[in-house]
Image (cartoon, rainbow, N blue to C red; front, side):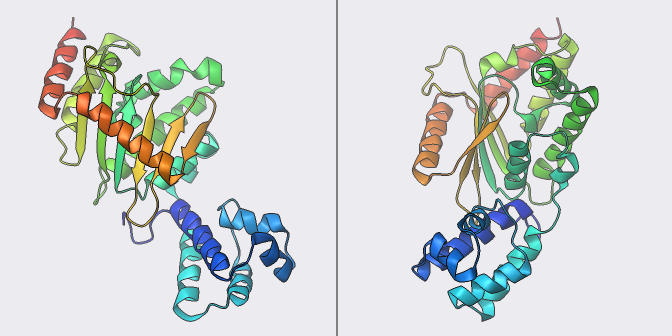
Length: 287
């Protein structure tokens, strides 16, 4: 685990998942459990989906209904305590979309991630100036204030430190389309610094940067996605759009994204070949 407590977002999801499994083992529907407790059916559903945080009395009531005690009950209360902790990303929740803060909470406990990016350098690998220019590019459309831009840049840099530079960093495999290296954000100096940063960060032992060249076969026609892998939780795929984002949690579909990434990676240059190409683009932005 990334930390002793782990991510409160993942703990909330695990708590809901555990409660659902305990209910199903008692052969109870959500509606039946709610009637037994004098609750609304939506309360049980929202707790199990991690959309509502239960309180200690809720856990006690559910434990009584499901006839659990001892070690299992202690485990549930342990998950509840960790779920009530505050994640670092919550410092930025006023300026970040709700779906993105949920993603940050999941990423905080991921052990491995696959990142396919056909348009921009992935956020984990961006420099401060490049990140600012990327965010500014959508400011007029998404109506982000000046303070909102600053907060998003700070959140992105904070994310990099907590994911890539922590004691037990998440392993990252990123595949970028070659066009990403040529799509300009800001002045050429911004792009040059970004290329140099890509080269530097690609040397980290837990980071792999691969480039899909323009003359390669494009094996999968899909937009950007991030596939998160966990040691004690089902994999999740994150899809970001202009105004919102989606999470793919169905196991069969998640497996499809894993296969898609493997296809993309199979057509990409090796890590060394990718560094050579990035170096050539660095020279281009120096002209």
